[in-house]
View 1 (cartoon, one colour):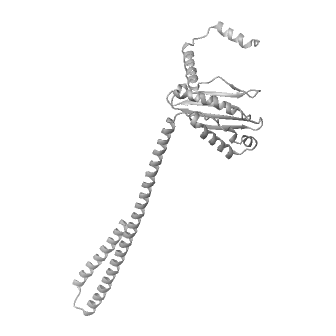
View 2 (cartoon, helix red, strand yellow; view 1 turned 135 degrees about the horizontal axis):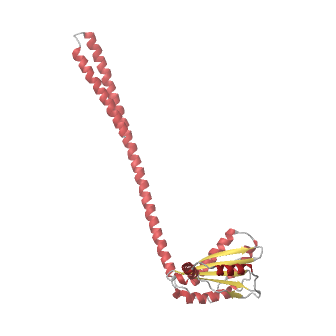
View 3 (cartoon, one colour; view 1 turned 180 degrees about the horizontal axis):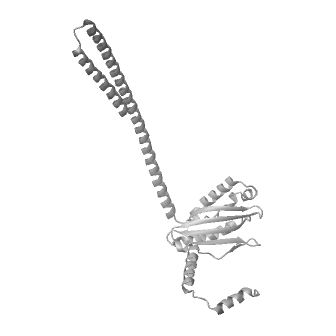
Amino acid sequence: MILLAIGAGSIIGWRLYREYLLRKVEKQLSSDALAKRKLRLFKHNLRSGHLLIVLGCSSAIIVSVLLLTVFQLTGGIHLQRLQEETSQLKEEVFALRTEQTEWMRMPIFAYPENGFAFEAIDWEHLLVSNDREAQFAAEYELAYQLSPYLGRTVAMIFVDQPLQEISIVLSSKLPSIDDLNGWEENFSRLLHDMQNVPLITQGTFSVQFSKDSDQSFEQTIIRDENGVWTLLERSFPNTDAQEVANNEGSESISSTPQTDQSETINTNEQKGSVKN
């Protein structure tokens, strides 16, 4: 638009300059009738050209203004659409945050009297086939059904086809350690229901607390030869990591140069045989 205005101004200025030269020549002409007639014809042609140029520039300016208006309207509509989508996304994010907050505050419900129907999942199909979609669907169903009783839960299923075994991992998140008693009761009931699925031979239950993170733990269970669940000792990853870091720090602080006698003892220990 600016370039068009500059071009139109340049053309009009050039035509005005030629008009000025024409008038200057007209004053210098003699009384020759033929020369005056030629000059009038030239002036008529020049002014006709002026009119065409003015009309052309005006048309170009009008078209440019129309195009600019269309572009502005289109940009305004696009901007309004983006603002509406942004507002909708903000509402969805707010709804998700509200839902997540309510979900995190959701108490642990009592375990159903009829138990959890592990038989609803086709474990044999997961073991025989390599159907990833079916496995993802089973993980989602398992997490969705157990979340009210174990807290916000994420489930993973691992299939060992050569050994014909299935392992499950359930990672739950609880608001605080005050909900641990309810989780313990539901966990005991859950083990009883898992007893009816012999294909599941191992399970790992990870519990994380939002407030008391140092009390988070992992509980692993394995099925023995008689098909009975055996509970291994619970591990506390956060506490163990802190203890290891403290031990390493204390060892580095208390370390002193070794004497020749200690070096000899270490050498003898390395060369000695293993004690029964």
